[in-house]
Amino acid sequence: MQRRIAALLGADPDDAIAVDRAAPLVVITTTGDRIQDRRLLEIGGKGLFTKEIEEALIAGRIDCAVHSMKDMPAALPPGLCIAAIPEREDPRDAFLSRDAATLEDLPQGARLGTASLRRQAQSLHRRPDLDVQMLRGNVDTRLAKLAGGEADAILLAYAGLRRLGLHDQAKSLIDPREVPPAPGQGALAIETRDADRDLPWLAALRCEPTTLCVAAERGALMALEGSCKTPIGAHAWLEGGSLQLIVEALSPDGTLRYRRAGSTEVSQLSDPMASARDLGLSLGQAVKDEAGDSIVL
Image 1 (cartoon, rainbow, N blue to C red):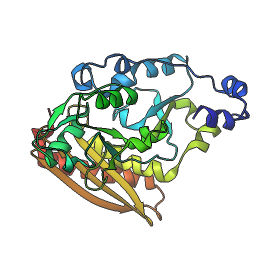
Image 2 (image 1 turned 30 degrees about the vertical axis):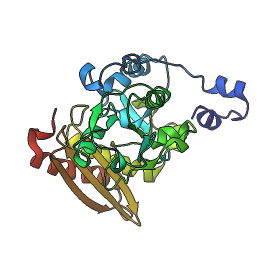
Image 3 (image 1 turned 135 degrees about the horizontal axis):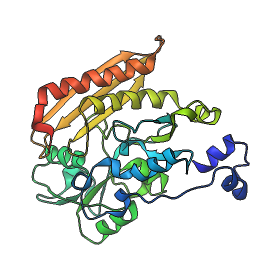
Image 4 (image 1 turned 180 degrees about the vertical axis):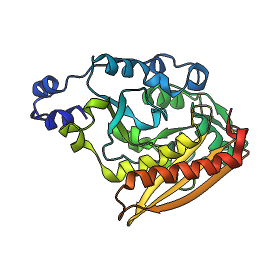
C-alpha cells in the first residue's frame, strides 16, 4: 500500500528511496499489539488496535492510517473518517490444522485455537464438542503454536495469509455465506482527517464495489452495537445490480444463532451507499430485536 500511495503522489513505485520520501512509513505499536496474553474483550475491545494511531492522526503526526477494516470499531473519533477502501482481498476464514482438512474432520474434543469470539461461537455452533482455547499473536506466532501442538487447529483470515504469501498453509476455506466472516474482513481502511477526505490520491484508491459491500456489513455492525463482546458475522456481495447481505449473531457458547438475509438494488440509485448502509442497519436491527441480550457475553 505504501508503494501504491507513493505512486499516486507522483513517485516512481520501483524507486525505494522515492517511495520512502513521498510516503514515509511511521510504525506505531498499539496497545492491542502489545498485549498478547488476553482476549481483546478483556482489555478494552477493538479500539485498542486504533487508539494510538488515531491520536497521531488528530495531532497531525501522520496523514493517513492503514487498518484492517475488521479491526475498526463501528464509530470513529470526531474529526476522523474512513476516506478510502481499496479493492478487497478474499474475505473468507481459513482453516489450518496439522492433520484435519476441515473443522468437521477434527476428532471429538479437539482443541481449536482462536482469540475471536465470533469464530469461537460459530465453531461451537457447528461442533459443540470442541475445546476452544484462547490463541493470540501475529500470524507467525499462531502458526508456530499450531506446529508446536498448542492447538489441533486454528482459524485465520485468509486475506492475511495471502498478503504474507502463506496462503498454502490453509487446509480449507470456510463458505462465507454459511459462516459469515467479521464485517469488513479482507478489506483495508484508509483513515484520515475529515478535511483530507476528498484529496485526489484518496479518491483514486477507492473501490466502489468493495465500499458498497463494506457499508452494508458495517451497517449491521452498527445496528448490533458490535464489539468484541458480541459474536457477529456479516457478508455482502454484488449480483448484477443487486447487493446481497447475510447477517448473523450468536450466543458466545454457540448454542443460539440468529440470521437474516436480504438484498437491495444499487445500480439505478442516486445514493447506493446509503441504500447499502440501510440494508445492513435493517437486517442488523432485526437480528438484535430477536436475539436481545442472548448474544452479548
